Length: 301
Image (tube, rainbow, N blue to C red; front, side, top):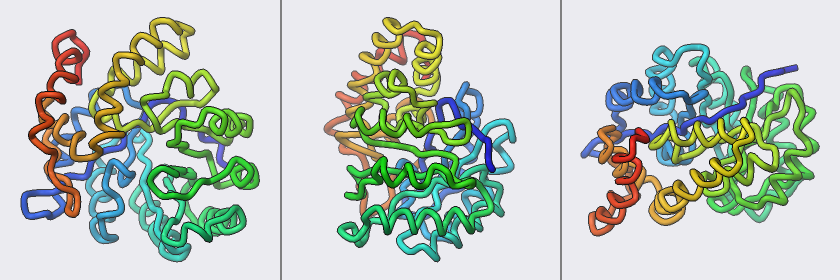
């Protein structure tokens, strides 16, 4: 049984694409030292922030092959392997594990979303975990997929020896609390929303995979550290400062805004892949205003 506990803050890395819409692995490798120099616990390739749904299998394998040698083994590397069919997910999981993934982030299938009930999802994740050569992290993002992995389904999966936990990207604190109640030394609950990270930590999650941490890793880790130290008032104040930027990026404008914000901070991660369109320049003044406080007050991005 796996006893790995992925506590801490993890950055989901953006996937760079060039001006011709081609995967640009070299760009990611050039940007990686920025994140390696931060106190992040680890990194996620091919999550939602990494535009996983727009990357084919050959490109996914190239990303893992390029990034794994650059990430020290003491920093965990998680790789998104979710596909629509069980068989395709198992194949992706095996390739990612062979490439050196420490754990596999598996989103819920969603093409047949009305059929993805507890029975279907438990069968899907059990089959993947039975076959995967690396530990599995469940990934629930109902706002994006239209499928909710319920606490009752998670309760059935939490005892699987190769399922180490769940990333819950929703902001429903009651559901988060139900998931935390299932936690054990071998089952970790991670938050996926920076806007409610303090509340989720207060509910007992072990950390987070936060899009904002790709932009503000030090600030996100500090938020985690303050909560762990019991400095709740200071943590809430920092949370209040982070929420407008987190909402602007994750809720209002998505991956194009994150890539534009990273470019503004000196980290080149290229363009979003079509059909996503580049960040609308009309919103640049608002983005710059949100970033300015962190850039000028000594909180590095």
